[in-house]
Length: 279
Image (cartoon, rainbow, N blue to C red; front, side, top):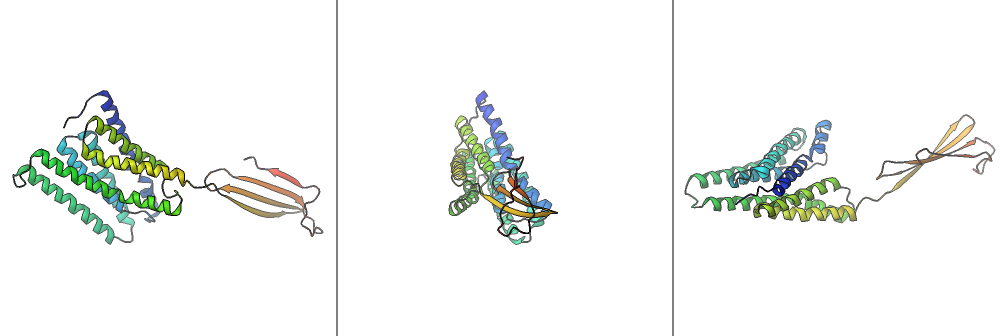
């Protein structure tokens, strides 16, 4: 296996590292909220554990094939960030038993792969060449990567069922899709099917997510609230209108003298309409 050192390859290595770092740190807001509120809320730990398993296997594979930049580097970063996220979740979750089981399975898989790799490299027990060992670990990483797609596919199913992409952040989907596409391009420049296959599948899934974000994007809805305020001899009615999906708000108010004799709720002749400066 040879790795290109052309300027184009170098550019894509840098871009891939940057996008991979963004993907690895993307859960920070959710876990910072857990740390601040001391409550895990609706955050699921399974995707993070699967990410750590995948990154551990990619670390081994990257070391075996000599792909230290970007594969080994971003895989090690993924192991570190995932471990921190799991630690935060474990500290504040009320149900630690499921976390114990997931982490035990994760540890078992990684230990088995490490033992296999060590035996295969240092003995003749498996009767495999170095290339065959790399291929075995490569297929293992593909299986782990496919398992990672379970969480995004569950989200896609929820979006289609509810016809709302509110649970699918556009920025995260875009970052994920770009990262996978960059890995695909990098693998075209320096062929590696064990990195390309899962990232090609991830890129396709990312594009589907972006399409769903557009098709089922949250609609702009408005709420109107009217408030009656009596101030001395004045009666003020204020109405506000706010779309949920934006930051602006629109308001108007009507001011008229308070008339006890007006039983028909009609506006007085000296009615004044005031428009909000936000218009």
